[in-house]
Length: 286
Ligand code: GUN
Image (cartoon, rainbow, N blue to C red; front, top):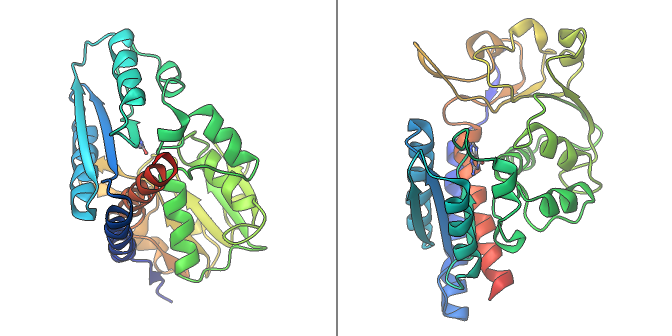
């Protein structure tokens, strides 16, 4: 058996076209161009690439974008002032502070300073709380991309056992919360695994849908996958062999029923969902 490849790149292109059409109608009807402001602190090479990709995607969708850069050595107050300025700027509808931040800055201080109505990453505690309660304002971008991929590829989520490996605030925790909600795209039975999980392979082998979001190259091996399962790889790891996911892709192909590649899987969907949130933010603010 060879697994079906879930082409996240192609799906992201479709979603981005849908959003471009929606943006165009929005501008025509409301006379305002949605705008995303991004803050990049320091020179982290991966963050620079991510932010550049976000800006390019905005441009192609007809969304305005701003980039605010601060030095690696900048103080917390300077960053908080910039966030306050963007909160107050009526031309900015969505904003994000690219993570990770330098050690002298407390990320939780910064994330709580973002106006929840402009928080297109959905990292603000108010937005996290709303998500947990099943009445989200914004869905966090990477988990939303994973959910869209499953739904649009007709992979049954309701009643499925979803095993997520990795309990990060950005992916694992919010995704677990989304997939257990009632209704479309939810109703799964979710197990959230982490570094202290006992007999991890036994747990992952019971997954109908296995989601790897740990940030360790090729951590999920073929023997950890139930034959026919859907495998979603959220990992992006830089190795001597180039970019690889959290799943041993070549070996997993022979066991899984469907699988996302890296690159070209979940990554492109994250940006598509950021555009979706920016348009939604503009719609709610104008
Ligand atoms: N760093 C890694 N992923 C993300 C993300 O989704 N948003 C932001 N702001 N920073 C990140």
